[in-house]
Amino acid sequence: MSLELNEDQIQLKDWIHEFAVNVIRPAAEEWDEREEFPWPVVEEAAKIGLYGFDFISQAMLGDETGLTMPVAIEETFWGDAGIGLSIFGTGLAVAGIAGNGTMEQTMEWVPQCYGTADDVKLGAFCASEPDAGSDVGGYRTKATYDEAKDEWVINGTKAWATNGGIADIHVVVAVIDPALGSKGQASFVIPKDHPGLSQGQKYKKHGIKASHTAEVVLEDCRVPGAWLLGGKDKLDERLARVREGRKSNSQAAMQTFESTRPSVGAMAVGIGRAAVEYSLEYAKERMAFGKPIIENQAIAFMLADMATEVEASRLMVHNAAWTAKNGQFVNAEGSMCKLKAGRMSVWVTERAIQILGGYGYTREYPVERWHRDAKIFDIFEGTEQIQQLVISRAISGVRIN
Ligand SMILES: Cc1cc2nc3c(=O)[nH]c(=O)nc-3n(C[C@H](O)[C@H](O)[C@H](O)COP(=O)(O)OP(=O)(O)OC[C@H]3O[C@@H](n4cnc5c(N)ncnc54)[C@H](O)[C@@H]3O)c2cc1C
Figure 1 (spheres, protein in one colour):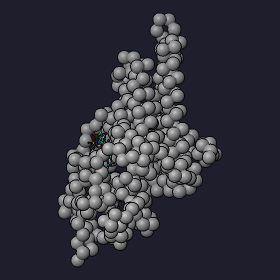
Figure 2 (cartoon, rainbow, N blue to C red; figure 1 turned 45 degrees about the horizontal axis):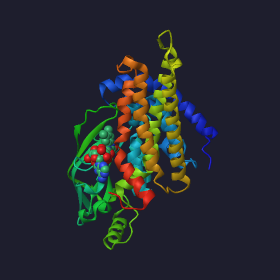
Figure 3 (cartoon, protein in one colour; figure 1 turned 90 degrees about the vertical axis):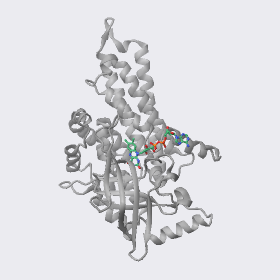
Figure 4 (tube, rainbow, N blue to C red; figure 1 turned 30 degrees about the horizontal axis):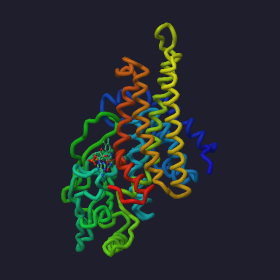
């Protein structure tokens, strides 16, 4: 196993870094304040080839190391997390399609999640609900099969969907058989403007404000059988296996989350690294008591700990990303890296505010925004506590609740 980046990955990192420096960072404050989806920046990313089907398929399929995605994501989120999520949020819908759909469905729908450089499209993954986020077995959105028409009728409300309502392709997780909990669910692809699908409330958030987060409402939303990911025969077989008490290897939402956790960890690493670099430079410049504040061990050691935490988190993310591609998780390494990186980014950005003192607490300096942005990594794609649950079950073999 080697975590050394190859020549292509080093070039990619430099290329995205340039985009982050020249395009993302200068736009970050404005879109955070406006609290709107940063279309011009995402369109720019599509023009240079950072946002698009070709990029994602190259980064995921053309990379045997698993490291290309975390490298690309860290660099983008180093630029800004709200804009970063606007660029990479579609990836969650893509993971939902690729993880649950047939090859034909994947090839049909994934390109439509991105559109083209001249006509940018978005994807949204809609699993969470107002009354069930962590509790994936508690979803109520129901899909009922109308055999005569080979159609599904979907009813319910999805909460917190990144790109929800503005996406061109929504991947919606719905309950088929409520008695089977999370094992009785399936995922559907639903294009925007399809009758019965609409955007509900748009949330006003603490951080990552450029990223659009909204409810998606499904009211008697009739979709053709072909939009069920994986197809009806496979679903029937799976449900039969579960009803007979045999092992089922597919839980629609969990499947998607598991494969994306190292990428989410990489997002948090990007923010953490930005905060360390920024506060380090600040500490070298800021004078107090006649000398730069970094000459105080209290500040220098804080920075040493911050840099160490970022490094440790990145190693865990890269290890998990490599393992996801080349091996098998043994101790929930995907969850471990996401847990560690999320906590790290919250802690490191808070320390960065401390190093900047009063200025760090103002919107004149970016560390305040980074701290607000970082908190989401303790919450979405499995909260801190849910990662602990997954890890503790994996290391103990005990059904911990
Ligand atoms: C900005 C943003 C973007 C999001 N994007 C998406 C998206 O694109 N698609 C999507 O489907 N969802 C998305 N989510 C939803 C997100 O995944 C959920 O918010 C998250 O899973 C937590 O669910 P919840 O908010 O319902 O909290 P709850 O599940 O109600 O949890 C509340 C608290 O209780 C704790 N808790 C719950 N159960 C247990 C337990 N068994 N043991 C110990 N502690 C527990 C939690 O850790 C948490 O601290 C997004 C959320 C936000 C805020």
